Image (cartoon, rainbow, N blue to C red; front, side, top):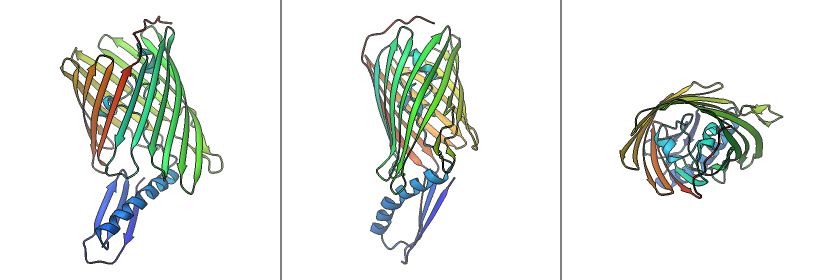
Length: 315
């Protein structure tokens, strides 16, 4: 859904327009630059509130990590320390306790930054994970806390998590929901894996009065590793009442422990680029995204290995 807000003023200057993440704000002959800046600061958060209320309770994307963003936001066949916020089915692939943080900036969308933290702890029968996510500012924000568990069964790993979701908007109070997500990942061969997961499997209600429910989302993807230094990904994600998004990405190890990434999305169209570095017990990933409406988004994530590798037994 696109919110179109027109602001009318009297001046001899030309009209101007800001397009950001599905929000179009047009300035008709603004009085001066200062007036325009003030209005952007005050009305962009209001537009976010409008979208949150009238877009069928559609949440922002909660998948995180600089690696994933550099790979066109693929997550289904990408098991790593961020699986607690992405495909929970990959959580049991974690081989050591890890803590990770990520921050994303959208310069064209005031109040639209995202941040997250993740913790994973493997045990002999699987792995536990805990994650936190936040989007927005003091005018409007979405927050998520999630707790999950994953286990391996032969060449397949499965996971489930419970999400506590909170929406907060000035003048509209708080809304909360409790969602359940389920995912899996299967290693078909040495170089081929397939993953899938469902977000909000139970379609939790956030407003009994208005019968508002969070839509379920299905994500399926394939990862192929034709060479030791090259990985290819293709993925499709589908939400109720929305067209499916198709994603394709590539990761190449240009030098030992140094990675280059790129990818694209269709519906909506977007391009992605990223780099990654791995040091002993430390991973750093940086990525940026370009879309026609949003312009640029930048994300950086850091992961630190807290403990030694753990050998786990398959259930």
